[in-house]
Length: 95
Image (cartoon, rainbow, N blue to C red):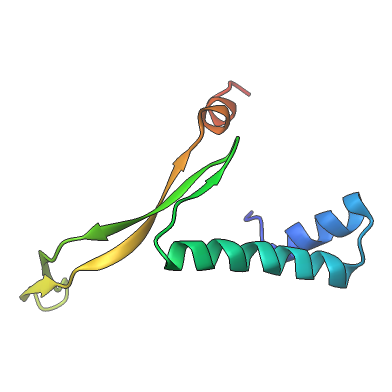
């Protein structure tokens, strides 16, 4: 089951005692700050969690799987996430 934005808002509402509207506003603001930083190609580092970076991908050859036609995929930017050592260790702990 995925952790959704609504679940994060509810958790903040319950654990911090903020109203649901205040919790929603806080989550929306944090996400807005992250999106703005990435749009300006700035790294987003969250200690103990990981780092989001924007990388440029060069144009490359591809193929349409339905028609088998060769084509050139355009250059683009992608967001890459690298986990912190703390998170990586926690994920890999035996259960």
